[in-house]
Amino acid sequence: MSTILITGGSGLLGGNLTKLAVDKFKEVYTIYNKNPIKIENSIDICADITDEVEINKLIRNLSPEFIVHCAALTNVDYCEGHHKEAYEINVKGTENLAKFAEDVGAVFIYISTDSVFDGKKGQYTENDQPNPINYYGVTKLEGEKALKKYNIDSTIIRTNIYGWNIRNNKYSLAEWVIDGLKKKVRPSLFNDVFFSPILVNNLAECIFEVCERNLKGIFNIAGSERCSKLDFGLKLADVFNLDKSYILPMSIDNYIGLNAPRPKDMSLDVTKAKKTLNTKLLNVEEGIIWMKRLIDDGYADKLNSYNRYHPAID
Image (cartoon, rainbow, N blue to C red; front, side, top):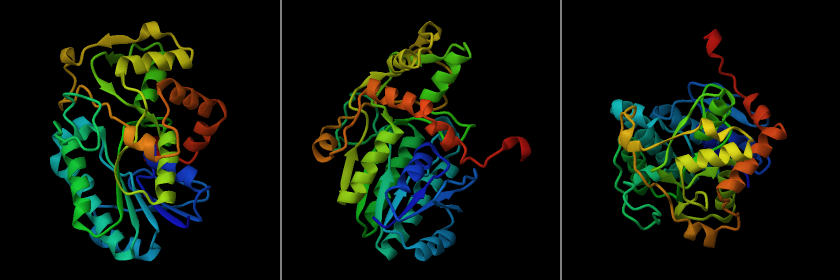
């Protein structure tokens, strides 16, 4: 494979995907915006995906074979209170990238979310009707719809990820739980919210296969197992040998700290992906064991060394 452009290079998926892509592609470009990065053997570009002129020029100059669009405003509560900003980034930004992908004939892979569903039934298939209940989910669904405006080969991946971040000022759910337990803080985890978490490195392998095999359409690419947020945290504690007694089980119905409504069961049916992909979708324990191995062998520290954002000297 020749050239790939990855957006959201300073994010959880974008950062890991860029690091891993350098072994798969001849040229790797990654876009970041507010959080500088420098990833070994990639070309890291500061750009604003909401700036149509800037993105037009960038894509025409690079003419990538693949665009993997990971960049998004993902803080659910922030999106709920900042509709305009969320729409600009998650919808208009996607439209800009798709529009100019069409001009250069790039294959477009859009990273969507399980939050496009209302969470009333769980185990959603690709054919189930999306019905988001918060504004973040609305914007991600609108991003999916935006792809239909353009004559591009596209793939939509609905997922829910965890793993090691490139930035040390932002935590995935797993990192937050691990850090809290190490500090003897008592993380509260919902026993009635369900999802199908996938380790970001596992998802990256799937994305590379999607590129290599030129797979198109909508895919649920998530972990092979449905679990509650509580059970996920307990499994993290087991694998990382941390004291699980510090974890506080809680019902989302009794939690008052959320500005945006949350789907109760975001779990995804991954039957289609399992039948289509050669890459194995890991269950919860397998993914967390891999996550621990990534810190034990120095991968996580190496990833974090690519971060160039230092808030103390801003």
